[in-house]
Image (cartoon, rainbow, N blue to C red; front, side, top):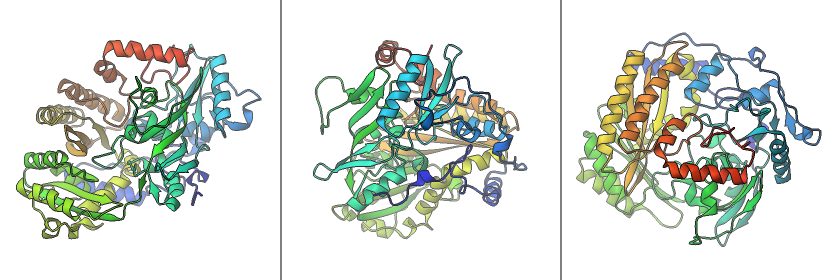
Length: 541
């Protein structure tokens, strides 16, 4: 059923992509020219990318038992590949050849029984287990950092649990294994005319189980944005046993068992299978991009569309700096990227109404959009296309920024519409001041990744000159200022990038203390020896 199993190709042990793909040095130089031309930041000589023969890892503290040896690997490449995530600090450490917290070995289960066996062994031997999907964590959610109270730490990589097992056409849902990468899953669903329509920036290197475990959000701006909305039932293996929830379209029977594991980030168990709600593949599409001279009026237009019931597939507002950074505009205007799609009916009426809302708020709307048609600039060469191309290449560019001495990192949140003006002002001010203090210069850009009737999800990008050897400290200070401003203004510490270890200080501040105690009690029930991803969400030993 799979057209191409991407997992047969070797992934890089650092950075983003497969060994035979990624960003070239020519691409990085072009990126540097663009950044220098738009913002004037100095571009440094490229730091050489690491090679595997340069990487030295500590000796394994534990080895797999004979009963598991066949599914386990402990070579340098495998251990290094499962050490770092994909945030700025991870890229910096990769370039510095610092892989200080490698797993002692990596288990590659071929069946659910293999998962059970690994967890039983780890539980009995006080060895921490870090579940691993595509490795795209930007919140230190997959790095095996454990205390000396554990004998060691291993990574459980689910890449071989990558099949669509069953399709229920009548209910438009499918039973899918948790280790399937986004492209593999869609390749298996495509012949059936079905799709999950869950495309996130890390789509190429993230898995269904990872999306569920981190409460990920897809690319589409409204409607079924969070993975929560698409989960119909779960199967989870924990050290205390295996749990299967019931398939239902909706359920009012007490506290949801599914919800306890959605967002658990590998701290309670391993999601091996899930029944997921699907959609028919869309055939009707219409799109446009709308420039606004005034950002506040663009925000008002976006809110009106979000509250109109039109449910656009894309409703992504880029402020002037974000528009400049992506090439969607010259930086003098904000741009609203707008699109509708359906598998059932034309979307011209929906586009007409959304276009009129934009025009009523001062947007420069094309004649085609007002007629319900795609605007000329909706293609790859237009503003929307340029932004999309920049967005898709974003993960590859991250290592390029780091190699050429440019600090580029992001953070995101969500808040109510009424809270947004103050939150935005405080966050931009605090982040800009911290960036200029740490880096001497820098810009802060904003876009809405998702919009809801009651509020937006603002996503901020920081670009600044980096100081070689101090990038991690520079970003830590900027992130501290930004996070404090976000929480003080009523936002969440993360809308879709998970908590991991990186966001723990602010997550602990955000969540109620009584809930934290209840969550710890739940963990003690399903994970009595606290071996599952200790330090993420909940403390370990």
